[in-house]
Image (tube, rainbow, N blue to C red):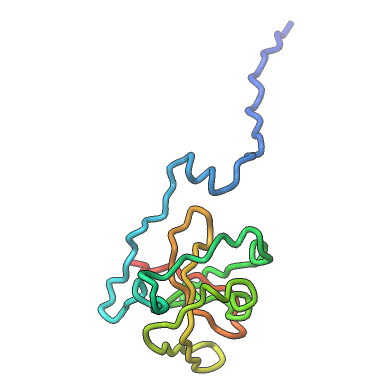
Length: 148
């Protein structure tokens, strides 16, 4: 007669109840806050001008309570900077829009486009604040930074 061998039950996976930012914090994942470009002509950390009387550019509050929470952000390996929709931020956070220190010119898929407005924003809860250029009729793009 053969004897049945009991096998251990497989581990069950349980859904995480924590928000992704809490999971990142628990596991110790942090995005570096000192990311800078090695390109000599890049000044992304100095993109925006504070308004008169401001010591620094304020960070736009969380996007959670707005319709931007569910919007897609395209991770664009060809982008040179974060680009967000001027229309969205004009409607939701006009007080956080700042002028860029210089007029910026971008070669897009459709045309050459100038930009002179931006916003300092934290895209995800665990993310470091970054300056983004605001453009009309643009999808929300986040760039990868320097890829070695």
